[in-house]
Length: 403
Ligand SMILES: Cc1cc2nc3c(=O)[nH]c(=O)nc-3n(C[C@H](O)[C@H](O)[C@H](O)COP(=O)(O)OP(=O)(O)OC[C@H]3O[C@@H](n4cnc5c(N)ncnc54)[C@H](O)[C@@H]3O)c2cc1C
Image (cartoon, rainbow, N blue to C red):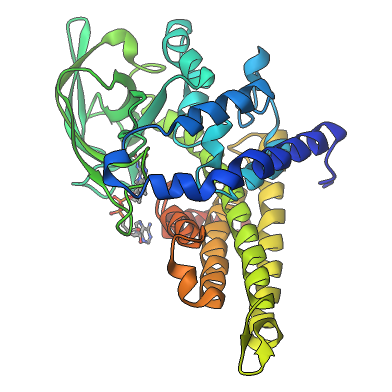
């Protein structure tokens, strides 16, 4: 394995880094503070659209998509995208500026891979242009949704339409004022074999019967302006042409969607951990306690050393998974994707926790990006498959491979 970047990638790394230094970090606190005020929650700060235009015109746009789309996506491999996503992960909201944020990235991949020409024209094009946002509605409050076969929302055929009924929650992005479409997972045939009961269907957010019940909070924060919604679907009618790929193909699409989505979160979390470590080093080098600079206490040095080792271990594992995805496909790389999904969020949570501790009281205050990073790492230990589910599957596959 050779993880030396090509000149093209080195150039992009420099460009993204310069963009972060010049445009993102200087307004990071201002935007974070703006979204702590409830009246601002579901609005778009003008700076966001301004920065998106700048990133787009610099060609730093849709970098996540491994497929070339003219000027809208350079078609980078996962390995090429990894260091760029890591840089974006250094600020909680930076990936949106480059049109590289979840859940839009996963939804765009689904539309690019499984959408037909009409679906791509209607939804993929505006998503790739960054003029609309989207949501992905799989999880339900009433069933253990880490097992996707449990999903109960019904998608019933009636004439030329499908009628959808169910309740969803943790629908990230659904509170955003520009969220115009949702990909909804539900059952078209509850009597079919377990893995072909589900389908995925496109539902415009303004379809009658789709009701936002409430925004959910994460440790008290509403993650505005995207938010996470609880949504009721009551006799929601959409044309039959809105189905993706065909009835019974939902599970297959979910598997295809989650591989890249998972590794992107891991790449960003490595960036969040790296920045936390840098902030920790700067803080402990600048404060005195008990007659010493804090950096000189042995326990602090151990925390720094351990963090550096753990970040580099996770980074290399991520690159290894990305490389396997590129060369052999997501299916063959599934064990490595599970490994990194188990390792990176836990690593980031631990490293951010050490950085918080070393900052003292300031560490838990949103004057630093640390509380946001901590919440992000903690969430990803549950979202896109809880740790235990990945371990359950990886353990099973490992035993099978060793027999
Ligand atoms: C902030 C946030 C954003 C999210 N965004 C989205 C989104 O945009 N769209 C969407 O559809 N969903 C989203 N989710 C939902 C997320 O994917 C689910 O919460 C996750 O899949 C777990 O499902 P569940 O909450 O129903 O937990 P359950 O399925 O009830 O599982 C609860 C716990 O049971 C344990 N468990 C489950 N299976 C096993 C096993 N095999 N072995 C051992 N223990 C096990 C684990 O500890 C697990 O955490 C989001 C969640 C959060 C917190």
